[in-house]
Every structure is written in structure tokens, then in C-alpha cells.
Amino acid sequence: MNNVRSAVPGFAIAIAVLIAGLLLALTVGRYPVGLGDLLSVLYAKLAGHRADVHPAVESVIFQVRGPRVIAAMLVGAALAVAGTAFQGLFRNPLVSPDILGASSGAALGAVVGIYLSLGIFAIQAVAFVGGLIAVAIVYVIGAAVRSRDPILVLVLTGVVVGSLFGAGVGLVKYLADPYNQLPAMTFWLLGSLSSTGIADLLPLFGPVALGTAVLVALRWRMNVMSLPEEEARALGVATGPLRIAIVAAATLVTSASVATAGIIGWVGLVVPHLARSLVGPDFARLLPAAAILGGGYLLLIDTLARTMAQVEIPLGILTAVIGTPFFIWLLASVQKNWS
Amino acid sequence: MILEGDKLTIGYPDRVVGTSLDVRMETGEVLALLGPNGGGKTTLLKTLLGLLPPKAGEVRLDGADLSSRSIRERARLIAYVPQTHVATFAFTVEAVVLMGRTAHGDLFARPTARDRMVAVTMLDRLGIAALANRPYTMISGGERQLVLLARALAQEPQFIVLDEPTANLDFGNQGKVMREIRALAASGLGVLFTTHDPNHALRAADRAYLLRGGERIAEGPTKEILTQAQLEALYGAPVRVITDATGTAFVPG
Image (cartoon, rainbow over the protein chains, first blue to last red):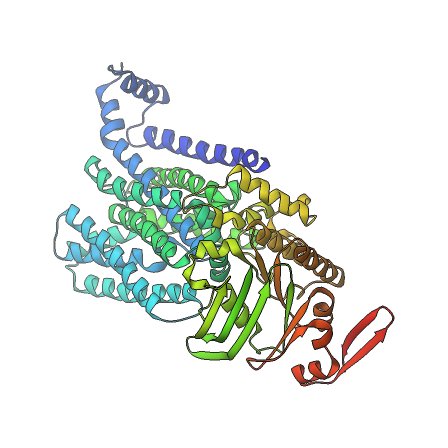
């Protein structure tokens, strides 16, 4: 049982990151909340009585930062879990959750929604559906093209269809009203959680929980799915149906987070690597570790985004600025084995 | 148990590789598949494994069409040892061998205590128990071949099919793999392997199957089939035979 013991420090680090992210996100900001106040408010809430603090503190914690904190954790966990699943499925550590066009589909849906001046929930719904449609198109085309390497065909189709949807986004931006619509589109395409409220949490939580539950249930099979196609089949895995299930679950999770937070790159690429270096490549441990670490990671980034400058910095920009050098370092240092 | 191919036409959707091939093997015997590159060895192997549907004819296991069994049932009867490759992710050796237990559990199953016990037993059997916690990416090619063999054994199959098990191995490890193949047959398994070296077939196999250009040119007990004339016909090249009191060896001429 060496393996079990060696995973404990990794999980401890991931959980520590999440807790640090939570404490920072709830206390730091334009209205600073002391750690003591935070703890007494949380304790009072659990115990069911009123805390002995200024009412504004409670309101900042539960109404202003609370929903955003939960959304950041869910989105971060979702992107990390989807990235982990896709990296395993495509046997490629350079893959991210938008490899099959989920993000570009969602982006096209969102900019069309903004262009048509739809309400915020309608825009999220259109983005969500756009992501699902893009991946469905990629999958149908990929499955129709006969090849000995279905994985490669799928990835290439994803790249091609993704760039077509990207062209669609460009067209809608070109046609959009440059004073009202274009800034909203740009803001959305760069990713942000600034407008997240309590009402956003349920449409985010439902799909993320469902998709993650499916992936976690399949975690042992996902180890085998990361082997070459024929080996996996010789080990008794019906790769075709299982691949559809994994792609569907990961797409559900990605589309829901993109619909809520816009496009946040890099999280789904970087976090799975970090998690793998903490607990190893076995999906049974990797998936939960990636979820915990992803939640903590995006919480920290989101806290940075809203406190670094006078104006909020879009999340997608921060994740890219942090992700790029990190990834180059990763390429240079652990290229030999992606452990 | 008997694994047989009956008048098989093998190939890919866009291409026929071989026609009217009859193959038959039983548990407890070793069959070696020899032939030049591109002759259809790997295609035949994959067809017998059920990974590639035959374009005509039928693969049968104890008389019943192989495709009538589920993919899981097949994996519990026939195991595959692919050529060693570099893995994408650094799974531990134990985790790799545990994957051999996949077909013994359902879709959501986690490895049971028995699964872990079988994995450890197979690692022991091949003398690589010390590698259990090493990353599969950090061991030598010969060790990887043995790990893949342990994974196949963990499937607890009746037949094991190996694709060029001695390719990329040093001299010592080639001998070790040959000995293991004999030991597998002695323990009651049916073994089918492909090789480029007739000496390996001579040493480890009971029967040999010579495949050239998608056609069977000879089949039978190794000592009768593996002759200078047959091998020269098989490879289209001169072959020399060296014989002494201890046995026979073939050398490319």
C-alpha cells in the first residue's frame, strides 16, 4: 500500500492551496475582512446564531464574495477535471479542455447572444448550447472519417472546426455595435467572474457536478483509455462508447464553466500537470486532486484579478501570463516523463 | 481450448492483406508466426485477437464465432502483448499490471484485493516484483516487455498473443522471453508469437506458420517446417544452416 501513503502529501498540498485560496478570497479586497471576523461569521452561520460583527462584514462575505468564491472553485475544478480527462483520452499532455471546440462553440454562442441583445441568462444558455453543438459536430465528423487513428482525426477535426467557429466570432464582432456590444463581447471572451451572483450558481453547479460524477465513476477505466486504442480493447474495454461518455461528460463540464465565466484558458492545461506531479498519473487519485487544486488555483487567480489594480483584470489574461512561463518551465524540466 | 481461423480474408477497410488463411492452435502449445515485413503477420494477429474483423471467414474459439462474445469475455480468454512502446504517462509498474484486471470487473469497478493479489503474483512469477513501484517510463526495454507480459498474465487468459516479443531486446533478455514463453505453454496456456528470427521459433515454438504476401506457404512442427529451403522461399534470400551436436541455427546468407 505504498501508493496510498505516497499520495497523502500530494493531497495535503492541494487541500492547503484550496484553503489558502478560500481564506484569501474571502478576506482580501476593497473591503478587507479580518481573519477573526471571517471565522466568527462562518462559525456563527454554522451554529445558527448572529455573529458579533458589523453587518456589512456579513454581507460582504455571503452576498458579495461568497457566490463568486463558489463559482471560482466550481469553474476551476471543472476546467481542471475536463483537462485531466482530455489529456488522458488523447494521450497527450498538451491537450486542454477546449481541444474539441467547446470554448470556440461557447464563444460563438455568447457573442451571438450579446449581438441579439439577449438577457444574461439567455446568453449563458446560448453559450452552453454552442459549446455542446461544436463538440457534437467535431465528434460526428471525426467518427465519419475512417482512419486507423481515430484520436488523431478527432483532434484535427477539433482544431479545424474550432477555427471555423473562431471565424464566426470574428464576423459577429465585426458586425457588432462598437460602443455597446463590442466591449461586452471582448470582456466575455477574456473571462471574468465579476458579475457572478447567487442565481448563477445552480446552472453552473448542476452540469459540473453531473459531468464530474461521471468522470470520477469511470476513473479506473480512464487509466486503460490512456493506452493505445488496440491495447485498451485487448484489455476488454469497449473504447468507442466509453470515449463518447468521457467526451460528453468533459464537454458538459467545460461548457457550463465557459457559459458562466467566459473563456479562461490555461487552467485546464496547467492544473492537470501540477496535480500529476503531486499524486501521480493514476486517474483514481489524479481526478480528485485536479478538482481540488483547480478550485484553489482559480480562487487565487480570481483574487489577484480583483485586487491587483484599480480595475479588474480579465481572468483569461492573468491565467495566460502565469500559465505561459509555467508551461515553458514544465516543458523544459519534466519533458522526459509526464509524472 | 481451440482458437482457429477458418478461410480468413484479413485486412483493413480499404485494403486486403491476406486471403484463405487457416490457422489453428490449442492451449498448451506454442505457435510461431514467421514471414517478411509486410507479409501480414500483425494483421493476422489482430484478426485472431478480435481487434480487426475478418473480411471473410470466421475466427472461432472452441467452435463458436469469436465476435459472438463481448469484448470483456474475449479479454478474459485471449491476452495481447503489444510491442513495447513509450507510455505517455508515468504509471507505476503495478498500476500497469493492474490494468490487466480490467476485464474481470464491470465498468465502474475498482481493483479488488484479489486483483491486486493477482497482479503481485504475476510480477513475482516473472521475477520483476522489485519493480512494482517504479514508473513504467523509467525501466528498461526488456523490463517493459516483461511488465506487459505480466499484464497479459493478469488477465488470466487461455491464450496469449505476442507481437514480436524479442524485438528491441538485448541478447540476454531475448533468451529470457523465450524461456518465459516455454514456461507459459508448460502451464497450459496457448501462445502465439511473431518473430523475425527463425532461431527463436525453433527454440520456443512447437509449430511454425510461414506467411508471405498474405499467403500461408507452410505450416507444421518447427523441426519439419524450418528448413533451409522453406526459409529461403519465405524470405526470398539465401539462408545458411549451422548444425552441430547441440542443435541447428540459421544465419542469413
